[in-house]
Every structure is written in C-alpha cells, then in structure tokens.
Amino acid sequence: MSKGEATRQAVLDQAVEVARQVGLGGLTIGRLAEQAHMSKSGLFAHFRSKEALQLAVLEHARADFEAHVARPTLKAPRGEARLRALFDHWVRWIGLPGGCPFVAAATEFDDQPGPVRDRVVHDLRDLFDMINTIFRTGITEGQFRADADPEQFTQDFYGVILGYHYVRRLFGDEQAEQRARRALDALIEQARRPA
Amino acid sequence: MSKGEATRQAVLDQAVEVARQVGLGGLTIGRLAEQAHMSKSGLFAHFRSKEALQLAVLEHARADFEAHVARPTLKAPRGEARLRALFDHWVRWIGLPGGCPFVAAATEFDDQPGPVRDRVVHDLRDLFDMINTIFRTGITEGQFRADADPEQFTQDFYGVILGYHYVRRLFGDEQAEQRARRALDALIEQARRPA
Image (cartoon, rainbow over all chains, first blue to last red):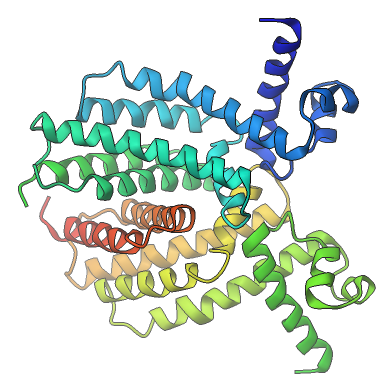
C-alpha cells in the first residue's frame, strides 16, 4: 500500500466514525480535517467534493461490513446456523460507537435523489439478497418449510435488527439484544412450523 | 387563534415537512424562510435559535401524530383491535411525503446529547408506553396469554414498523405493507398461542 493510499484509508476510518455519529450530511471536509488533524486542502486532494467523500465513506463502511459481518457469517454452516451467525456479527457491528452507518445514511438520503441515495439502495439490496439467499438455502436443506416466503423473512429479519438498533441506542436498554434474539427465534420457528 | 399564532402554526407545518425530508439537522432558519416565503428575521422572531426551532418542530410533529394516529387509535376496542388500529393509522402517517419525522430525528440525534435528543427519547418512550399499555389490556381482556411479555411485543411491533418504513421508502416496494401486516399477524398469533 503506498503512503498516499495508507493516508486515505486512515482518513476514511476516521470519516466512517464521524458519519456513524453525525450522519453523512454532517460529515464536511472541514469537520473531517479537524478530526484527522489534516489541512482542508490536503483532504481536498483526496476527495474533490463532499459527495465524493460521502461515496468513499459508504464504500469504506461496506468493506468494513464485509470484513466483520458478511465474510465471517459465511464460515457458519448453511441455512439456520448462518442466519444466526449473521445476526450475531451484525449486532456486534451495530454496537460500535455511533451505530450502523447504513441506517443513518438510509434515513438521511431516502428523500434525496442522486448518487449517494443510489449507492445506499444498492448496498441495502445486496444485504437483502444475502439474507434472502441464506434463508433459501435453509429451505433447500430442509430446515425450513418449502413454502416459507424468503422476502417475508428478509423484511422481518431486518425489522428485528432495526428495532434492536433504536431501542439499544436511544433508551440504552440492555435487554434489547435479548429481545431481538427471541424475535429471531420466533421467526425461525415460524419458518420451520408447517403452515 | 391570534394572527401571530396562526403564522407560527403554518410555518411549523412547513417545517415538519422539511424535517421529514432533510432531517432536523438540515432544517435551518434560512432554508425554512425560503420554503415559507418569509424573511429570516421574521422567522427569528418566532424561533430564536436552530435548537428552539428543532424542538418546536418535534412538538408540532408530535401533536400531528396524536391527532392522526394516537387519538383515532383509541376509538378502536381495547386490546388486539386497538393494536391493529394503531398499526393502520401509523402506516398511513409514515406514508406521508418524507416518511416519519421521528425515525429521522432518532437516527440523527441518537449520538448528540442535549435537549433535542432528550425530547426524541421522551416522545419515543411515550409511544412505547402506548403500545405496551394496549398490549397489556389484551392480556387483561383474555385475548393474549397471561405470561406474554409486553416489552418483547413492543420492541417487535416497533421493528415491524421500522422494517416497513425502510423497505417501502428505499426500495419503493409496494409489497412492504402487506409483509408488515403478516408480521403483525404472526406477533399477535404468538401472543395468543399457549407457551
């Protein structure tokens, strides 16, 4: 990795942290320069505009999610065990200071058409495809009933994660994770039970 | 209502609309002045600071939620029917342009201590208490089993609403509402079934 690239990565680590806390909209080159102890002009050399910076942050956050959530998940056995692994890794990732940068970005940009919104939707679709595929494997493996609805499960699973995210972060409620786990158990039991 | 008060209410209607779209952080007195065709100094007379404006917007959004969601919900019979009424009114309210202003505010301010975050947490707690109380009534009325967990149901219910909110608004997926309805059915069935 060249020195320029190493600096870029270090700055993006900082930027993701800032974005987790104040959102992508609050992440200005000025603010980031202050946080990273760099000059604004130095940062401008790396990211030519606020939008380019926002897109780079999303890409960096996605790489982080892949390294700490998606790839470790794939080590678990297919189907149910993998769904539970995804849940575990995801909950841990959400627990980092500032919460999930994608939840923040999704809320901020759902009404603002453009490349940032497109990128958020694209990433979230990939995530939904991942949940969907793991669930389908559970059907193929005979763990879930043949007529279980993967789209239904995916939206439900995401809802459990979001419920956890908000209750944990706003109320500081330590029971939130256990409740989310019970909700996941119930979803999985539902998928098993004959209709 | 005095003329000053009528103006204030009209401006706050506008402000809630802006906040639904760009969040409370993006709601500046300058931006609102432009949207409401008023002078910045005229707006400063009503709201002395950005924070005062944000708090006024939350209060106004809450009054709106009470008028269009909470009060109509209470007309439904106690317990299950009232939970379903809450769901229906809430889904309709979320469907307004820009989505739910509280979801936006909760995401923005979960990491920013101060009066705005306190207000968001306060309002969300009241909402959770409402769901909780309706569910408890369902137990008292014998609709749900005696050992059903109201805190569990409340977090689950909120998760269903959030899952709907994101899937509908980011993917424009028209099936999102039907899936959320099925998820609610499943939660209610779970609460009925003996352990």
